[in-house]
Image (cartoon, rainbow, N blue to C red; front, side):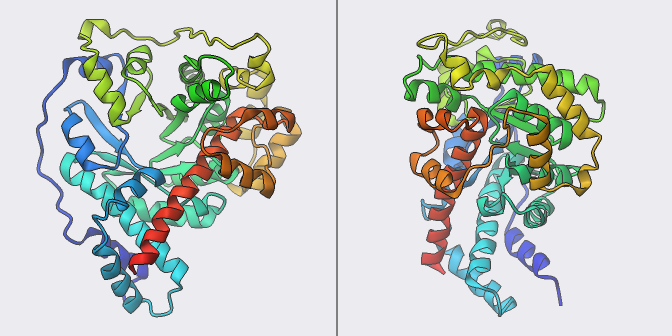
Length: 412
């Protein structure tokens, strides 16, 4: 009898048609971005939004729990859900409802990504279920299964949790390309590159600008850009120091076309449709695009104490002491590490609380506040801004995943 994983893979790939080589229009200004070192990805799971914007220069799309939920809530897979539910239940008669929903969610994530592959024959990032963010074994299991569906096209998104660093390391060592997502600072990504060596790390720059403006700490301009550029510089330094590291930076959560021009030269942009539309409307010519690597961005706060008080300085500054800690960590037998052991090592060696331990009450508050946290209460609790932003993002994804799972429940 065939293995359950093979059966699910067959369900996923049923009726999948890999497209012939498709030619799309070229854009000279987007090509100039490539010429200065920046690949362009589109950040959407919605085929209808991607098609009008797609140019020859785009090489990938990214999906996540929120973006997949947006597609599922449109109802386009409502007929598929009960069909695969019946087939799965017939194959594995003792399957629990929770496992059934997880497997159907796996199929839907793949199908959303495969629609994009069918139309653009490109790379697509697919994200793990949020409930596995602290489960190394399950994450490696499902991450490997995602990759095995379409090894030439799928990149596996792993969230930045203590366990996520180990998950990304294990998948990467198995030659599975990992998009290590929900990063917000240079130091988070320095740590990720040094010990996990994922194919990609991220700075969610738009949310960093929003957390300043929404908390009325300043105008919100250029904080994300500053953190992104600092990350690119430190990653380049890290790769010179350690030749085994191949990690590239994704500038994520881009909010405007101007940000694309301002950050030309970083490794990758993943841009939502709105930002790409704005970029086209700027009518920039190729000669307007310059390599911006090393550009200094000035962030204006309401007063000079805010940057340090709220921890914004930790988004773009990495101390020599922190780099030494990471050097020491690389000497450890990391293959025997789990999330708790990583937290313990860092808490003893580094005073910055880069992987702060939130209580269950804290996590409930974060989830209630949404993806942009209210900062004053967290300053009092000495929670680091970058990890607070990461956990806020994870909790936001949990909310969207719950909506997706509930849709599956309604239809099975």
